[in-house]
Length: 247
Image (cartoon, rainbow, N blue to C red; front, side, top):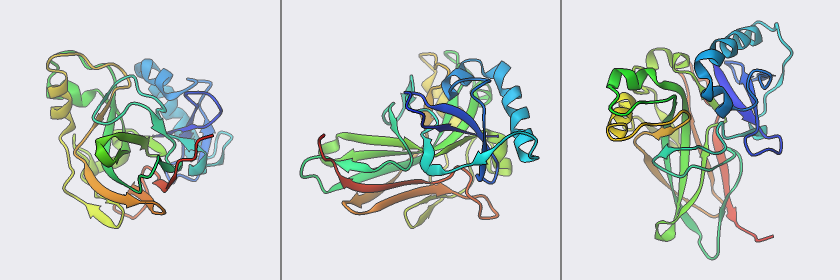
C-alpha cells in the first residue's frame, strides 16, 4: 500500500491512503491521525490500512484527486534518523539558500522507516522491522552546514516493489538526469549494525547509500524512482532552488 501525509496546518499533517497509480487518495485519519500514530500501533493498524487501500483500488470508498503539491513529507518530523536531519520540508517545497550562498550539494537516497528494533537484533529481525520505504534528499550548504531535507510524497510498503525488494531496493534512483544503480543498500545489515549497541524506536528513518548532486540558484531538483513499466512509485521530490528571504 501507499501512504501519504497531506498538509493541514498541523505539525504532523493528515494520513491518507494513495492509489497505486498515484492519482487518487482516501482519508485514513479515522484509523490514525498521522503516520507516526499509525506506526506506533503498526501491528494492529496496518491490516486496516491495507483493507482501506484495497477498497480505494476498486472504488469502494470516497476518494479525491491526489496532488503531490499538497503532500508533506510522509513523516514531517522523525523522532530518530540515521543519516541526515530529522525535520523535513514538503517534497515540492523550495530549497531556500541563505545569505550569499548560490550553490549546494544534494544527497539523494532510498530510506526505510522501521518499527521497534531491539538492541542486538539479527538481520532477519531487522528486515521484518522495515515498515515503509521512501526516497530522501538532504541539502548540504557551503561549509558543510545542513540545509533542508525532504522525503518523497508517498511512502510504500515493501510489497509494492515486488521483485525490486529483497532487503535492498533493486530499481534505479533517478536523480537529476542520472539513473543511479550503485546506491543499493542491504538495509537489514545497516539496521542491525545500527542496533548493535542501542535500540531503534518506531518511526526511525534509516538512510541508505547516497548519490550526491550539485544544484545552484534557479535549478530544479527532481528525484524519483520508477517501476519496470515506467510508472512512478513514490511520486517525485521536485524542489526549486531559490533565495531565502527573511520575513
